[in-house]
Amino acid sequence: MVSFEMILAAIVLTSACSVDCLVAGLAYGSDKIKIPFVSGLIINLICSGILAISLFLGGLIGDYIPQEITLIIACSILIFMGLHKLISSVLKAVFKKKEHSPKEIKFSLFGFQFTLKICRPPQDYDTDKNKILSPKEAAFLAVALSIDGLAAGISAGLAFSGFAFYLTIIIISFIPDFLFLYAGHFVGNKIARKIPINLSFVSGLLLILLALLKIFVI
Image (cartoon, rainbow, N blue to C red; front, side, top):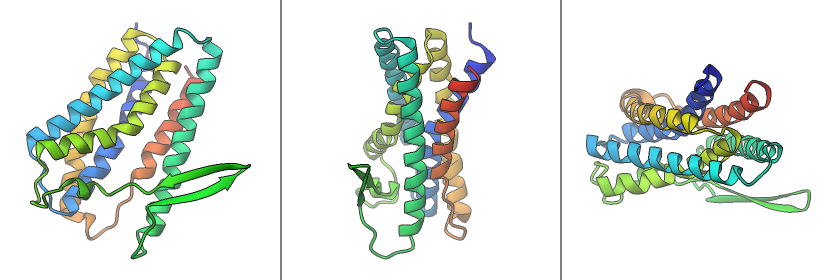
């Protein structure tokens, strides 16, 4: 039985993973790069497929770890990923104004070395520069967009067990990826060049919200 709280968690997780599709759509729209239906479908299927695999992996791992430990691990990863996205969003906004931006930033904290990578812009995946995202280019982009979804899915699989919950996420995830990609493309095509839009921080906030939902609500 899927509860309202689980549906809410599924919506938050899929929305967090889909924000990257929205940002990619904005980037392609602002650069007048077309995204054919087949390419959009490939992106949707790969992103949803990787999310589904990661959920089941998280569930399998969770079967061998005490529930209290899985909750701590899962929520810690989600919060860390959320903070990482928030910091990366701020850094992108800062370095976007500079002509030569570093590809990565290294810093130390409490004796540990950390590296923040400034991700390549989605437009770079249009490798042949023909202003059309081919199915092959779409597949590479989808894998890149799914990296965060892989970690988030494993964490969600650890925190939220049950086949019904996993199936709910898989079903829901097919919708926002596709809609966000083309909605972002439409908006980017119309206004993104005139009005700078940075939404990459939204997925960070949603991942933190997902962790808080598990801790205090579900």
